[in-house]
Image (cartoon, rainbow, N blue to C red; front, side):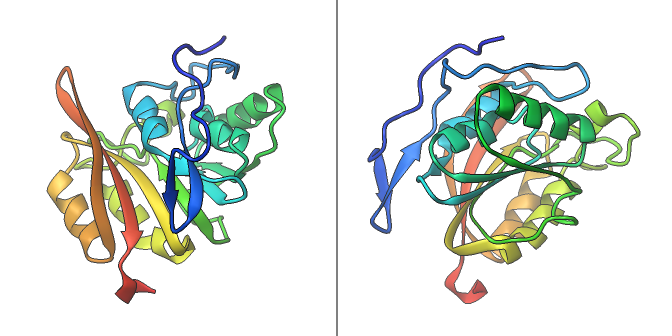
Length: 219
């Protein structure tokens, strides 16, 4: 099934430290398969895709890849991509979609960084952020449940991500008003410079897209 909307933007949309970056947009030439046991792209997924910036040759990690939407766009932009998810169903879905589009992506099943190694220029994460049991036996429930308050998974991610971020690297993160937003931002600001890139009101919640960079004192 083809996904609608805009094409991937051209290079030179902006520069970061003298490097030309792609601003990601949904590419209608890419073809994705979806399954009922993997989180399918929704408003939060497309918001993440909209704000991610990456250049050809950069190392890119999509945490919680699901169908591989952002990872596959990054691979098409020329990044060296790793896609990770706690769900084996999602890992297989990402792998199939990458192969379907003729793109090379390294896939790995991992609970956050537990089985991941390496340093990345860009890390993108649309975390599970709704309150619920993070240890559910249902893979689809675990794709949206971020712990009792909704923020536990994200706070744990922030506590580990800095070890895997290259100097000058960037994290793109989606948060929700239903998450413990204050607690997450407090945890982030201890170590990261935090910039709000986009926000969107949908039905019963507001979504927020952030870019995080390590503070100089954190290196």
